[in-house]
Amino acid sequence: MNISQSKTTKRNRPPEKSVRFPVAIHAKLLKIAEKLGRSQAEVFVQMVEYFHRTAKDPADIGDELLKKTFIKNHDTYIRFIRAQEEKILIPVKTEVDRMVASQIKIIDSFNNHVLKANRDILSGQAQNSAETESLLKILMEKLDTKESLKLKFLYILNYYSKSSLNVSSKDKEALLQEARQQINKL
Image 1 (cartoon, helix red, strand yellow):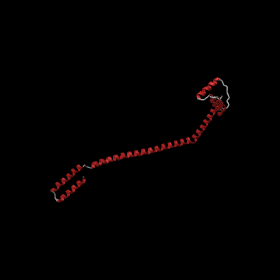
Image 2 (cartoon, helix red, strand yellow):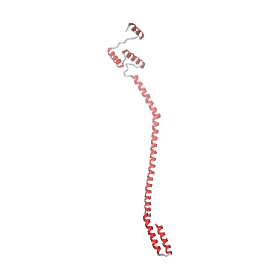
Image 3 (cartoon, one colour):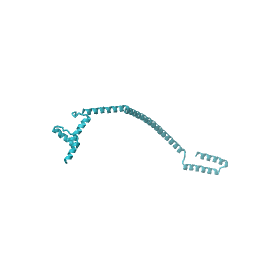
Image 4 (cartoon, one colour):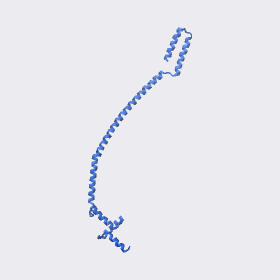
């Protein structure tokens, strides 16, 4: 670097001051600067700016101002949550509980009616089934099979034909009347 350049750079920079501090503090400052990847001067300037902007006391390690701010914000959030709880959550929960209870009553009532109707239908079906079965038995007893009817009719017809050969016309009429009665009984 030549001399003219160094004079120019010194003219453009703001005036600087030096600060004396113990060597142990210098080692800490050096570690901080290395960790942040900045020069010691940059870190020092940024620390001063930080304390200036935040109005924090560097001697206050517990950071009482920060704690007070957190407590204030926490209290604000708690008040907001309680207000929302009273205005929205509790009424919504009350209405939902009421609606659930109403739905349970409706379901119970519906189930009771449906179960009763199903029981009535089943008992009616069982009764109808028993009645139908007894009617079918009666019908089966009353009705003869086709073959049985043919046999009975043939018997009546044969009886009539044999009897009508040697009988007068007056007796034939009585015999025909009797054959008709036998057929009607089938």
